[in-house]
Length: 102
Image 1 (tube, rainbow, N blue to C red):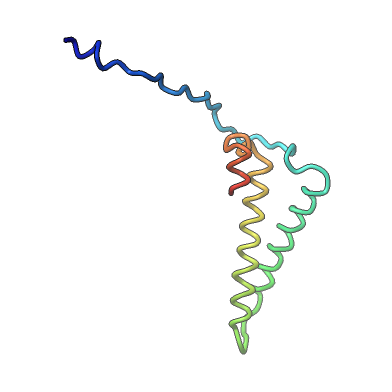
Image 2: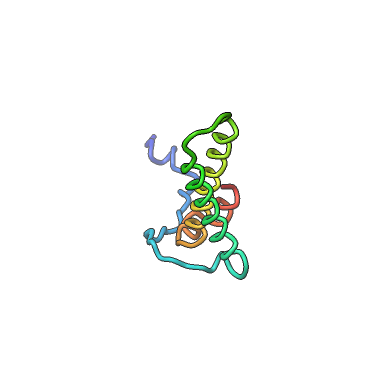
């Protein structure tokens, strides 16, 4: 017996959709209406909070200040990430379901 005749593949490999090359084009399709200005204002205010926290030189009880630093820096970085994902072609590259999970 010929091994090629007995052990043929029974399924075809799944064809993957062709991926287009990633580009850094800017698009505002996904943040329409009031959502874009709100995200921009949120990013600016969280950056102002980070700067204001860094201005403080001396504090008596610094635990609250450290918590404020953590939350304001986290808010700034996450709002930048959201703006980057929604305003570039990364949204189409990842797919809507993966963006929603993210």
